[in-house]
Image (cartoon, rainbow, N blue to C red; front, side):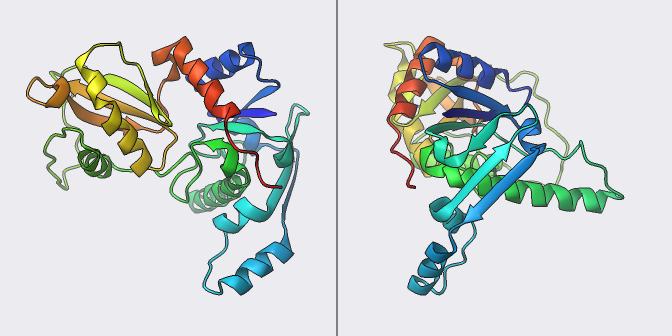
Length: 270
């Protein structure tokens, strides 16, 4: 089984799932966050003996996410009757951002916030079971990878070799006007490959820096936004990054690359 996990309105994920089916991945199951949050039945097991061995080997180990990835299993029954078993999953495209709780009712905002945190923790543990065969592994700071501020992305981009704009940090929370800014171009990094380029253009020279940025961010899949700047190297400057790029930007070549990437993933330890 192959999984595409996404939010309900993620059109790019639906497009990717359809394209992977056309490339004969079978079966490809698309599961949105709302469906995942309304499981009819769930079983989640951690192999206690393996965890005890890990604890004896490293008494300072904090457990949690690391232990789940190595010794945990889950089985979920979805509202539509589908059954997801972690051991049956061969590869995952992970584009989840949060686990919704809007279908539940709570007495106060504080209760709602608590339930959201608990639901995210449970989904994070499920995802960590699949991390070895997952495109964009979960993080304690984000279900599909570490969420970062614009300043954090800028620091990583500069270290990767991309031209960046000076940033002014302020306590003024008002949004700066976007009018007048040059249009951006998005390149999509998947592993060691960069999609969205047209052969022979100046931006081709930015591929190594984009790959380096994705690696430093711990992301298999990353969208890198660029804006034109004739004074910058290769004529473009870093304008932001996203763990949820629009995969449709690169068309069929993106689907071919995603298919190849998934089928090359190592088998999940059992």
